[in-house]
Image (cartoon, rainbow, N blue to C red):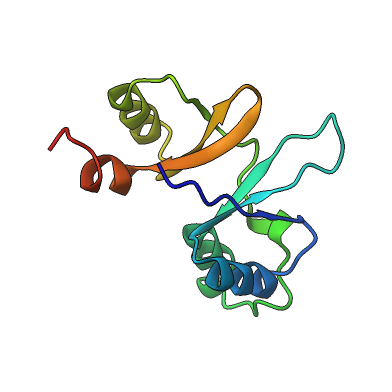
Length: 120
């Protein structure tokens, strides 16, 4: 599990998101809730490619809220790694935040499951 979780505002531009990812050395950002009734979102490298590069838009004109995925799918810290892998595959996700006592404590990714786990 990666423990570095970085948040960004939905009104930030894609350029600001990439600058934050580079600075923090992460491949995803958790998009902050606008209010208590809202849900968290996530923006990852894949979203930037689909929302900026492929449609040939500039990173300054695209906002995070336009390309993020929402609501955020999370996994409990007690979930067995095999179940986490199955959930990620079935939902076509590459990563999901890990939640414990209502707080995000890290993120698990398919690559980490394989490269940093004793299953292999």
